[in-house]
Image 1 (cartoon, rainbow, N blue to C red):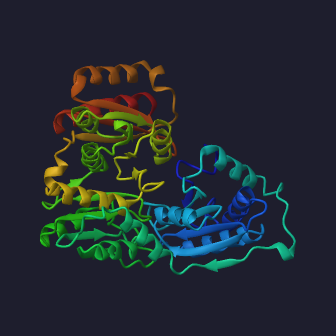
Image 2 (cartoon, helix red, strand yellow):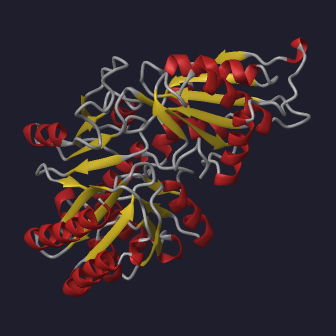
Image 3 (spheres, one colour):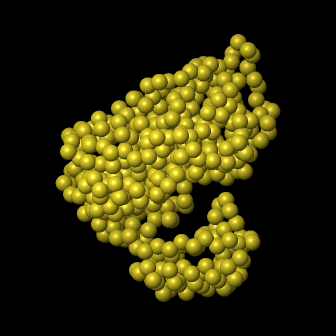
Length: 449
């Protein structure tokens, strides 16, 4: 990746480089320049989550886009997948999302979708980056009479809800289902409750009063504790927690147990296979998936591929190999038969559809896979040599792998954004997993910490 775009667009603290109004204007200008097509009325859609800094960045992006003779359509707070949907349904040239996903409110980000509704490939992002960092010098600006206009779309939310309901089986209903939603004070705060209510469910909604500063604050997909308590208290059938921009979903069963993204993918893949709609009998996930995920799929007779961390890499592999489901352990799951990108609400609907079709409680479906104990330790490091080139570290990893055999695994990798080495061990028991993880982490600290 370049210096501006990371694995999920541009991201940083709002009003500090690179998340400044000046930078947003340049990104808007560069994006408009890149996606402008001759002989047609150019159009870019802009949506955001509920962060207070979204207003500043939205207006700057609109200025940059209009300065290139391209029209800007703003849809206000809408989940990231809702903006991907709006981009394709409105036949726009591109879609821009202002969000830092599951990060705290101080952060914000900008990610871009193509007119087909897919996140931009690395090479397109690098083109935008080159234009931005060259101060847009190579961009020819239009005359005053050719400038773009800005419009607000008020019915984007309604259109998206209709789309979401279309992903739920026509012969199923949620009547009689009792569910709890955690909207993380984020972009799903209106869309999610309305969607499930319109499908007939009895809905209790938590964390759906955004102030601009409370997004993801001890709530959402990374903090499902309150959701779990509420599901048990209300004797609900299931609970679902979304992240700030609504592309992730974590589920809670009727006993209050939290399901990971891996467990959600496993139970959905099993149902898809039974229905004959699991394209190429294949599931794609990242190296961070629990070892139990691969074991469960093998037992189900399902093929399994892994990619490096990042939903864009999962999507690339899904498209290359013709898979219909893939995703990350974090709950970012792509159902390509339904949408072009990860969609938390669509994921929740697929889980509920599986519960309805099988007539089984979520706790029983969750047993599709056994989650192996996992321990992760982050070690601060001075530099990042190839781990295999440090004999002591290589030996420690090899020793633990030999001890675990097929009953666990080791994943040691450097952080892409910090001077940090992540040590992750999965094993048969909590005690063993903890011991082996500490052993490797201590060796890394001694050698390069």
